[in-house]
Each structure stands twice: as structure tokens, then as C-alpha cells.
Amino acid sequence: MTISRHTCLICNAEDNHPTFVVREMMFGTRETFEYFLCNECDCLQIADIPSDLSKFYPTTYYSFNTQSSPPRDESAIRKFLERLRVGNALFGRGFKFAKLASYLVNFPPQLKSIGPWLIKCHIQSFNARILDVGCGSSSWWLNDLKTLGFHNLLGADPYIECDVKSGGISILKTDIQNISDKFDLVTLHHSFEHIPNQAETLRAIRSILKPDGFCLIRIPLLSSMVWEKYGTDWVELDAPRHLYLHSLKSIKLLAKKESLELVDFFCDSTEFEFWGSEQYRRDISLMAEESFAINPSKSNFTYREMAEFKKNAEEANNVDQGGRACFFLQAR
Ligand SMILES: [Zn+2]
Image (cartoon, rainbow, N blue to C red):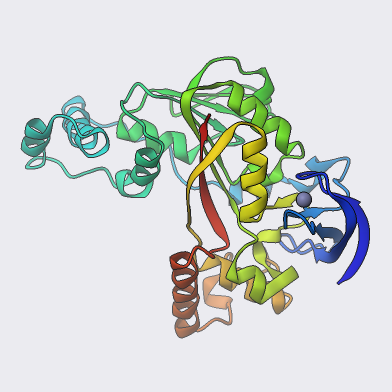
């Protein structure tokens, strides 16, 4: 670690900040990039944003991030019964009919994974208007929302080839600054850390939120056990694609400046944080043949080690020090 003079793009502190050299390790080019840790707000950020970021996003990057398939085409009666149950679980309405439906259908599995976020964002009906920012050409989140019964859904990503319809959901090739509708909820699932203009982006989001609307941001969290343990081998640094690794302090500060209040947060780190970082420490890239992500059977991790990584992640989450977090920001 050395010290050099930089201006923080989050809090504007111009100072001699500690700097770190971070390698590109997803694809394993091992090209190095300088990051600095702001003395004031504790945000770790890339010292020079590359002029052409697109070259760091080959096609394989997007396929690696695909997390779900489009919604299934189910019978109308099944959808109706599921919606009675989901509506009761999320909005507290229609208990009697939901009880009857419970004898006929199960909850869709998506309810367990995304339901808690919707409740924290005070979503009150299936008519809620929801925008997903930076979702690529297919959004697992919007697909899951559609499966649950939501229908006012839109995606936006400036880097896709053209406007697309994925699973019946429109995804526009556009910057958020060009969107003028109003939304109950705007989400950024691991896209915010890739965006150069952090304050401008939050300002644009604030301007399209309905009164008391929510912005859910899911990003890596620097204030974490995994950063403390692995430092520049932390898998979430993902140089140079992750431009900002926020601390709790820096995200709060940034949100407040744009009239968004941090009303809740929790950590949702997984074992990936630990095995991925352990691989980088052993000089194994994420896409390498022997990477657990590519060939679990060729990786050197024992079953016991993997169980330990899972336990590490759970323990970190329990004390709000996981390497990934969900921030619930409300328009004020
Ligand atoms: Zn700062």
C-alpha cells in the first residue's frame, strides 16, 4: 500500500489517500489497476476510470451473469390461485381466499427469495411500477416479479444492442437520465458499482421515484470481513469493472446528498465471497479451468472447506459485515 493524491468522486475529499494495486482476475488477464481508499468516506474507488470500459465486458461476461430463465407459461387458474396466495403474503389482503388457495397450490419459489425485498420497499399491490437499471438484455429480477404477478415492469440498460422484449417485459437501451415515467421502486442489482457517475445516477433515480418511493441498491460492501481478510484478493473488487466499493458511510453520504434516506440495509453475502477470494489469493482466476465456478470437480476445495466458506458468509451477514449488501433508500 502506498499513498497518493486523489479527489474522492463521492465526497470530494482531495487528500493523500492510501492506494492499492488490484489485478483483473475474472478473466485472469492480470492487468493491474490503481484504487484508492478515501480518508473521509472510506469508499474504495478506481483512480482512473478507463476511457473504454466496454472492452472489459466481453460476451462471456453477460452469459456468466445470467441467473434465471423467463417466466413459465402456466394455466390461468393456477396463476389466479398463486396470486391470491402471493397477494396475501405481500400485501396482507384476502386472507380467506388465500387460505382456500393454499389447499390447491404452493407459493411460487420466487416469493421466498424476493418477497422480503418487496415488503421492505412497502410495495402495496401488483400494479406497482418497477424499473430495473443495468439489467442487461434479460432481468432475472423482473422475470421473478412477473411470475409473482407484477405487470408494470420495465428494464433499462445503455449497453445492450437494442430495445428488446424478454419474457414479455420491455428492456430499453437507454441511460436512466432519459426515462421520465414515475416508479414505486427502482432497483440496481449489482449494477451501481459499474456506473461512473454515481451522484448523477442517484439524482436521476430520485427524480423518477413517486413520493416515498424506494430505490433498492445491491452492491459489494467494503465494510466487510471479507475485505479485512483478503484485501486486494477480495473477489468483489473485480477490477476494473467495479469502479466503486462503497462503505456504509459513503453510500449513506451519497444517498443523503440526493435526498434519499437509507432506511434499512442487510448483508446478503454468500460462500462465493470466500471461495472466490481464496482462489484469487492462490492466483486462480474465476474463469480458469480449475476454478470452482467453471469446474467444481477440478477445484482444490474440499467439501469441508466449502462448508466453512458458507459458514463464514452466514456469520459475516449476521453481524452486518458481509461482502454484499442490500440498501433500501426512500425518497424524502
Ligand atoms: Zn470520499
